[in-house]
Length: 333
Length: 283
Image (cartoon, rainbow over all chains, first blue to last red; front, side, top):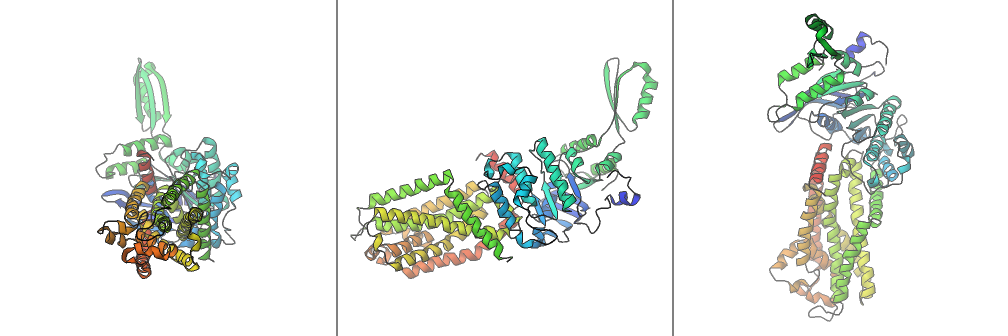
């Protein structure tokens, strides 16, 4: 992962191990709910074994996008293909290759943890192949998500985090080729989060599972994903590895200083040049100087804020704003 | 194998859920409370006679109660379970599992049959202990009980499922199935012969399966002489099968379409919306 990328690789933004036809392909996806436009031309693809994070503020259309890919929601326009199939046309064999983890499952409260996992796994048995034996053994799965000691508990007695881990286990019980995770780590403690990250990496490394997850936590996206897509204003405004995105936004620098006890802050395009001018002008009167390069997180948060402050009644994003964002993120779209 | 597997899983699922219901405190409480109340009714009626006959009134009420419990499980049970399971995500889970919807539907029917069966067994055991005369029921009577049981479930389950898939929340699922059901039970001659009801209610009651389920069960289990208290002084076997059959056929034709339309619309964000609403208004 640390080797210098060749131009061809950076051009495709996909490391070489992800060869072959894309597992997920989305082109010019549009989605409206009545007059409200949520997605306005989303395009991206994901290769076999790739972990892609869909990042964006609440209401940006992350869940809508993932539901369209899961085949649970009809789109307004555009082309979508998952495992080579248009999701609404997907049959049960296609369904067997898809793993889904949603945000708000509260089902099967009366079932025992292992009993539920074994029952749901049973549906995948006819779809077992030599390459992908199905289902995954329930004991193995429980160990993987750290629920072994809760195997005989009623599901309703699990804590929020444990419940989510069970949902993840159910999502992968069919050894899916594509796994969709909607806000998977909401309510996880740091330890559970770490274990969850291991599970995702195992799925992509050992099972070549393509993973698409939504999150509004940048740190999580950075840790988990080979590639981050930032969704804002109904479009993908950034697309690349965490490193690439950091480099694209490295431009701005925050400079703080004080003169005679009065504090100043300035966001400079070129921090070095600005600081030089500052000293030329004020010399020794400059005190408490701080120069901080904007991180990916700063830029992301700023972007989120900009979209969350938009008026709620007008069109969701104005074109100039979206253009400016795309410019901020180095023109990726 | 591919089609059989989900059917077997659905059967097993229905069985597991029945076992869960029987071992859950809240369900046990309802089972004991409701059935206890009905058995008390039988106890108090045992010395009364059906008007115009010398047959114990309880011997007519017991089969009526059996008919009512089939109606309650089929209609109310299905409506409430479906609306609740849409709300908690069980349905979406089935949808995201290969052949999961087929397994789910099989499980719902299995559970309905088992649940109604438990109700019948409770009433019959109580009847044998409390009442004289139930032991005299001929084999034909028991066979027609089974026939009315199956036909009654077919006539009510699909309608309950439709209500469950059309309502917006599980609370509405409860209200919209419980209130009409309670009304129908009151006017359908379950606790007292319908001939004792105002005449204008007779045609209303006879449109719905509740009345015919009660009548069918009485025809199966009550002494022949009790027919005197029925409309027209007869068990009207033919009409019973015709009306219940019609409800079954129409229900089975429409229900799959409505269920499929509802299932197609289920998605994660709908689930989240309903969850938020449920949180807001309390449970």
